[in-house]
Image (cartoon, rainbow, N blue to C red):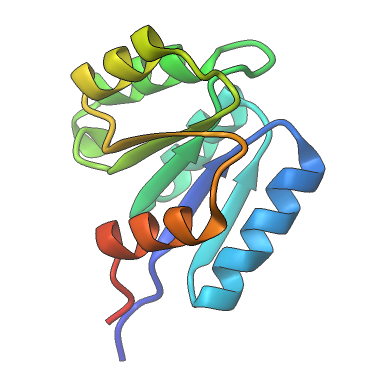
Length: 125
């Protein structure tokens, strides 16, 4: 039996965080919910997820700075990273891609698209 795939989900809107987390659990993923980049960094010291989903606009450290910080640490360099944000801005999307994010998905988004992207990056079988 293979280990469940783990998603670290960084989002400060609690209702969105819990709803989407449950959706991914229903799909068969383990989800670790965090509401700040500082908490996400602490969680990363405890486990290395298979994927990180993160908002950009966060209290304290924003999503871009969080991504930059974790990319400097060897163990976290290859974790796929998807921005999930209301920040619909071409420059931000280009920055995300240039820095190595696998996707930049703006809210509101099609749920099917997000599920498909996650499954492409993290197949369950």
